[in-house]
Amino acid sequence: MRGALLGMKMPEWQVDGLLEDYAHYRRGEASAVTSDVERVTGFPARPFAAFARDYAPAFTR
Image (cartoon, rainbow, N blue to C red; front, side, top):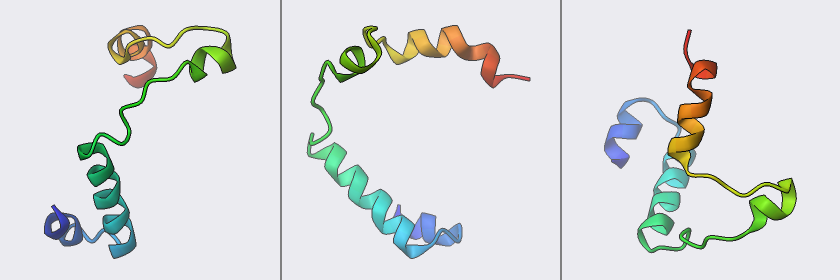
């Protein structure tokens, strides 16, 4: 992946950051689920599929 990203002329610092992020995901370090969305917004979080369905018109021409 590193070679592919560098081959697309992505800056090395950004490639390093992306690889570090993906390493965290692989180790499960971003898997915690909290109630922060509801605490901050007053509404429960919803699945991404529901968001994508409800807001699809905003992302199309």
